[in-house]
Image (cartoon, rainbow, N blue to C red):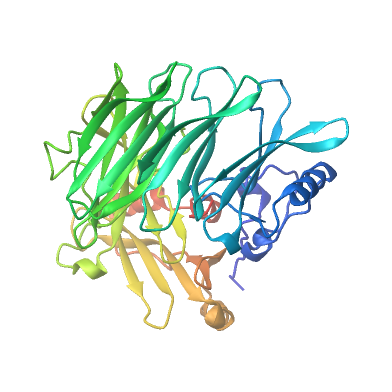
Length: 457
């Protein structure tokens, strides 16, 4: 048989997994199970449970990247970490709290308790807002989906917790934006009915948190799909605003701080069509692992000029800020949001490939990457990725096996499918230099596995 089962757990191609020897990939269901706690973690959990008010339960803050309902931070700067637990009391509907515990000779004891009215903890992070070298607790309290949130900073001073702030907001980003020892807060207030939006910069001064600048933003939008603070260039942080507009379109604004003032580096207000406009939302992220956030754009796959928008296959192009008012392309790939995977073609493909997508009404899909020669007729399959519903997977494998196809199994995707790559059969209808170039850019089985990733990775 020509069937080749190449598992993602193959040691030769998974250098990103920090373990020696081969292992089987953990299933998504197993990843969702509560991991076993160490004795130390169990001790903290028991102490928190004992000190929680009657009827209270632990709750996860809603901001992306939050690591749990119980966090650890050295808030008082004594070199020993405190445990910080977030909770809600469902029976009271609008009661939230934060419990701070200190470990002493007799175990974990309550150091301080914060209570606020609200329904959800919309945001929680530890940042040195005050500039004293110790992390401060930044919390966004939320009453309901229809209410504005309230941002406050809690810092340890004089042997107790002091509260600063209390600013209303819709979206928030907290981190160091100007290179000094203190973190700044960027709070966005958006009124869709009033067609207004504004970003405010807050910094901690001797008298507390002060608004030091504000910047008018585009108010004629649907809303903010993502607000992300990250590295915009080497040594420079920024706030990336991924914004929804129209029926399904989007664009990205990048805010930086220059000489204490907020700057819209792409001048979106002065250029509403925008250099970051895209037909569908694409979240900014560090797509290539270099530590810098890229802004995603969409390019129609070549040869699909007459394809309806609803069926258009898109190539994702990723750009970094050039430090002025422009963008520099650094990467491109294919993203399948329905089935939760991406495929990153090599640099040798760029400018000489396209792709075709076919979606099955009963579930499943295939995307074929095609080599492009000098003329439209000079095309040849490079690789095809299949998303096969689990209930049809075994039957499909038998069919491919009977056909003698070379298959690379890539594992489960989202929405109950298995992902596999099929290599091309036979010689393409190319000749001369085109055939030689085609063979030069073909991928090996291992290269296919290396260039495939789940979107949750």
